[in-house]
Amino acid sequence: MVSEVPLDVLSEDSDTGPAPVVAVVGRPNVGKSTLVNRIIGRRQAVVEDVPGVTRDRVPYDAQWNGRRFTVVDTGGWEPDARDRAAAIAAQAEIAVQTADVVVFVVDVSVGATDVDEAAVKMLRRSHKPVILVANKADNNSLELEAVSLWSLGLGEPHPISALHGRGSGDLLDDILNALPEPPPIVEDGPRGPRRVALVGRPNVGKSSLLNRVSKEERAVVDSVAGTTVDPVDSLVEMDGETWQFVDTAGLRKRVNQASGTEYYASLRTAGAVEAAEVAVVLLDSAETISEQDQRVLTQVVEAGKALVIAFNKWDLVDADRRIYLDKEIERELKRIPWAIRVNISAKTGRAVDKLAPALRRALASWEQRVPTGALNQWLTALTQATPHPVRGGRAPRILFATQAGVAPPRFVLFTTGPLDAGYQRFVERKLREEFGFEGSPIEVSVKPRKKTGPGGRGKAHG
Image (cartoon, rainbow, N blue to C red; front, side, top):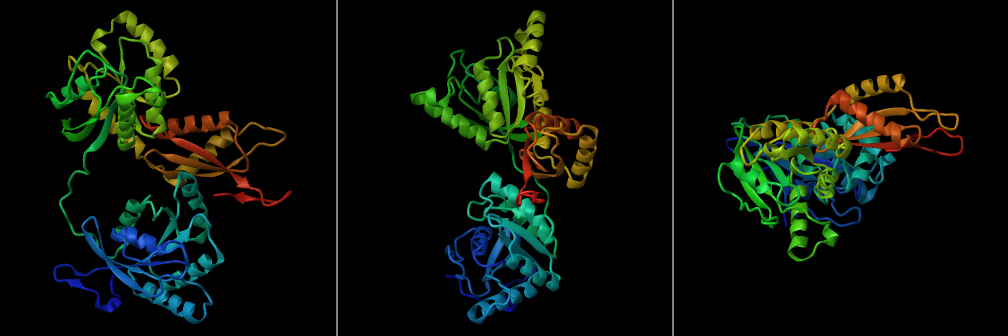
């Protein structure tokens, strides 16, 4: 149990001075204490699924990226509160006045309430920097609902799940950026090795490629398919950068059709893809693109990972095979024309040096963010030049768009009605033509305006 201490006697470090203060405020039961526990990295703030558990200002020491600060948990704030609730609200207001930065928490599953709007007025009077948090965004659908909180006028909402940790790292980065003192100057180091999954059907050359790029025998290579069963992690120096490669078992069958060792190998391979940031899918250039190859590609795309397709064994490809391969690529890979392709030979080392630049391009696209202004200017021009086809005497319009996230990039189109699937694909294709995203899947979803009643004007639901 952490004892409460007055904010004016918080401990100081002789070298760095007093720690800046971050106050977490919001109406009752929006998850403030759960968020405090997430920020401090331990379960100390009392959490219960009923409002009013936290009553006083309770400070805790916190640290993120080498920066020390104090986070203050507060009770639920309500306007016109009486008796004990009034004392709790007063404590929350004092926390706001004594804070350097205020984190205002809203329950995204409920949306902005009258109490939240009243709290915004109180926060504006404080003239303190405010970070708007859309808590309980436990899945992608709820994360998209955070867009509606722009209406509070506090800037961009930060969708997070304090309970599960979604988005908490990005939120902490933004809290540090908002603190009055810059983080201490430290020598910049690498962000850590980028995680690369080597995947493909059996005997396509994954282990040979790993040995080639690592310049040593890291994995067992055998002409017998299925030598690799467990994913093998290797730190590899490639093109002046350290990468974390995972060599995985070849996927022969669907997981639900595999048995024994192969079943568990398939599960571990799927786990390696999930844990990776980018996947290198190896295809055998000398053989026809198979159903197994397609299944591997689908697994990577559905996992939302950046993608580089490496056509291995290029040393075995003659002129005739190249003609047929070009036709196969056009036919079999037409659903993923955005994938970066490199032609290599793990055996001879041909063009293996092209792999690192391809991985960097794919990862840059995977993490690319398009500014909202630029996105909507482009979209307005696109829809004016090519409006949606008229259906039933009217055509749905795209009101505006926003990028809901990265890794992979996710976009939401707010519309007056459902879009034809073909027009949605057209927007996605043009989005790629304008902004790139080479080597990364992108997700485009549509949020039709919610009807408020028969004949009534609705508003964008989100």
